[in-house]
Amino acid sequence: MLINRIAILGGTGFVGHSLCNRLAREGYKLKVLTRNREYNRDNLILLPELDLVETNIHDPNQLEQQTSDCDVVINLVGILNEKGNNGSGFEHVHVSLVEKLLHACEKNGIKRLLQMSALNADAENGKSHYLRTKGKAENILHSNTSGLNVTSFRPSVIFGRDDSFFNRFANLLKISPLFFPLACHDTKFAPIYVLDVVEIMVRSLTDPESYDKKYQLCGPKVYSLKELVEYTANVMDLNRTIIPLNDILSRIQATIFDFVPGKPFSTDNYLSAKTDSICESHDLARSGIETMPIESIVPRYLKRKDFRSNYSIFRSASRRQ
Ligand SMILES: NC(=O)c1ccc[n+]([C@@H]2O[C@H](COP(=O)([O-])OP(=O)(O)OC[C@H]3O[C@@H](n4cnc5c(N)ncnc54)[C@H](OP(=O)(O)O)[C@@H]3O)[C@@H](O)[C@H]2O)c1
Image (cartoon, rainbow, N blue to C red; front, top):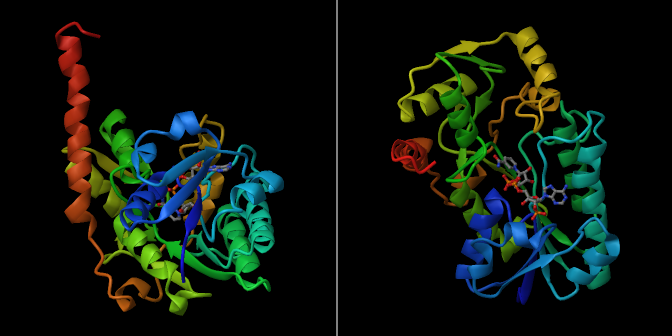
């Protein structure tokens, strides 16, 4: 398959940065569609052959126009929380967008699409709005009749320098006193390194074997959430006692956090965490990709972060703050 240009939606995010870097290195021309070019220009605009274009991807006309010179689309757009609580935000971002994207691909004769989904995505049986809408998006794409070849990727939690998992727990642990109450502590995760996710995406791009497949992406080891948070505290040299909350208290914590700006934890997150985020099939191993354990990567960025946080202490000691 000859690829002239790849349109990437959500390419400015955590996974997007790594994917764009890798694709640019492979020599692909990229067009990253963003809601805010100024805000997201750092790092990306330095890549050769990458156009960062500000557009409203929810407007079908703009989406169609911006993808008209591309022959592949990669959709990385996803949200973990919505403004309200009725699921309409998730429907808008995960489902309606994919319907518009499918239409744009049909109009522009695009025959290849990679979709970033999530483990446990299931339109009918998913426990949260997040998982149901991710499942609906997969169904819409995989049942298309326009000859669009779709591959979906279903990762467990993804880790890497700018992840929102270890970095978030590291920040929360730093500001909490000696005790750290933890909801959904026994939910299991198999964290997968962002570059391993990128590897299978890049390999799939031109591989007809991957058409219509849904790959489950997990790292080499399974941990409970409590083990992962304890590990984070250890890496940061923080002496914290993790207090596991039972199911009722976890739900109450989520309900309270629903009202905190930015929703650090929400009822929808709580419902997602009722299902373990672990793989039934080992699709990365089958593809010959050896996955990185957290122990080889996470200390590199958490320890550095910890060191950098000392700068503010040095600055205030020298009265520069
Ligand atoms: N990170 C994980 O642990 C993990 C695990 C499983 C699945 N996933 C899935 O992997 C994908 C990428 O994750 P990520 O961690 O890289 O996410 P991220 O850093 O939050 O980036 C997501 C991107 O989506 C775009 N976006 C967000 N809300 C949008 C909206 N309302 N309308 C249009 N665009 C919007 C943003 O692009 P602009 O700001 O440029 O518009 C943003 O850069 C997501 O679909 C996520 O559900 C992630």
